[in-house]
Length: 202
Image (tube, rainbow, N blue to C red; front, side, top):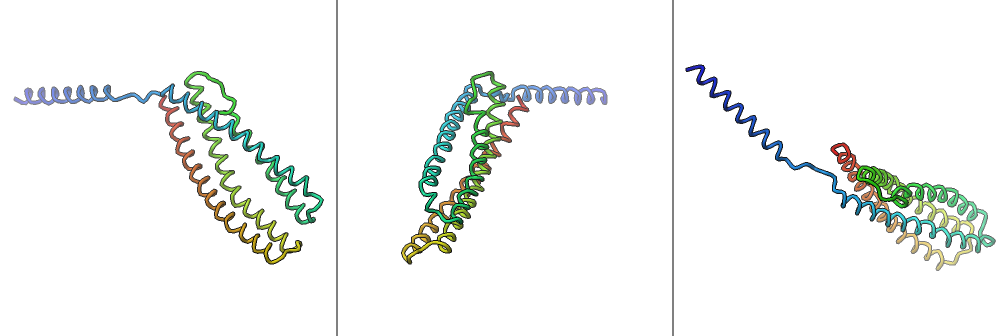
């Protein structure tokens, strides 16, 4: 009797093991979607090339204005402008360098697509970090310009009012800019984690 019961238990265990094996083998495999990866990298390539052009061209008006009005600036204003360019130029070069992977990438195999896209997303985190902190830096620079004008400039009450009118919307705009860049940074961090997991599971 006991032998019969033991045999029945063993058969039940074998059936359960077989069922679990069948269920396990039926699980879908998360393969890398090659077409989606190519599409993502192609889209990223276009975006980064556009950002490179915008970032580069944005400097020319500033350089022209500085050259044109240099003789009319006070010593304090010149110091602020030089400090701004000394800070901004290396940051611009660094951002252009961070955009290089996707901007100048070429079609390759799946693994290389995943690797390049992952590296660019990691660089996007750094770009978003720089963008986020450039918001409060721009506000500080504007405050420095306003302080320079108030201390060294010959300002009528109307011009003083205009300076404060400029300051208000700029502070609001830079706050929105900071929040937007911070959200982008967090989104890229999540995307980077997902891509690393995808690479491990591949």
